[in-house]
Image (tube, rainbow, N blue to C red; front, top):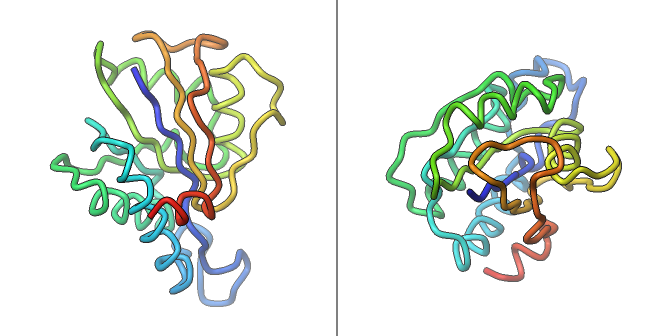
Length: 165
């Protein structure tokens, strides 16, 4: 199974008046950069069988951009276990419930959760991986994911993804 982890794109700054944290949208720059990065990702990634987003607006918008660029025919799903304060264990439990032998899953979320999840899957220290906004990685895992069972296939910055477009 392949798990793609993608951090949401550039959003309205935290604490901006008029925007609750859960409803901060992507900025115009964030949308533009993510669209280009998603086109780069589409050059070497097939549409995943499942695209899952955090319920926060900026992650949902990022997942929608990815679904369009990857020409995904599957509906987007939201998991609360992809919010910034979720634990890797909570997320791995959900992954295990939805995994199949040859499945590919794209999880769109936030920092510090994605870094902690990647590190847990890889059996690495919590600060081993950091995601920039719009960055992505691919981790190969057995059907039943657990701590330290993953293998990092690639980790790309948003700039690298845009250059691939």
